[in-house]
Amino acid sequence: MGIIGLSGCLASLLGSCVGTMLYMQNVSLVHHTKSPCRIIMIVVGWVFVFLGVFTKFAVVIATIPEPMLGGILGFIMTMILGMAFTCLQSVNLTIPRNISIITISIMLGVNCGQKDSSCT
Image (cartoon, rainbow, N blue to C red):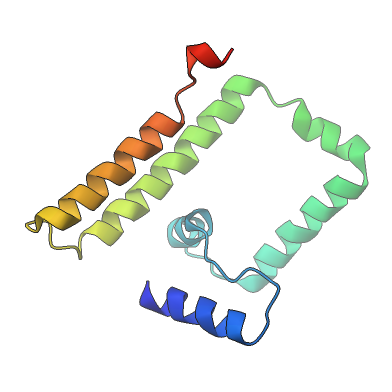
């Protein structure tokens, strides 16, 4: 995690305008598929560009039923949660400060997703 922060600082000092943050979805995807090949990621990126340019083909993706998309999203979120628990193995959970950080993070993550009925 420190290396990620260091690379972000170095990129900002060098004037990089491209985001250098690693997203947990990508890390868990590489971890579970065991294929950190750049060619695969490049091909998938070009497929997304193709679908964005030729919207008639993107309609096929848009016809996927919402329950199926919900299942896929649930699977992805549990993969990310599993990776988070893997990262927590190296944390000393006997220190109250660490437990508080984890508790507040989970609480905010759960509560931010709740829709307030007074907002409608």
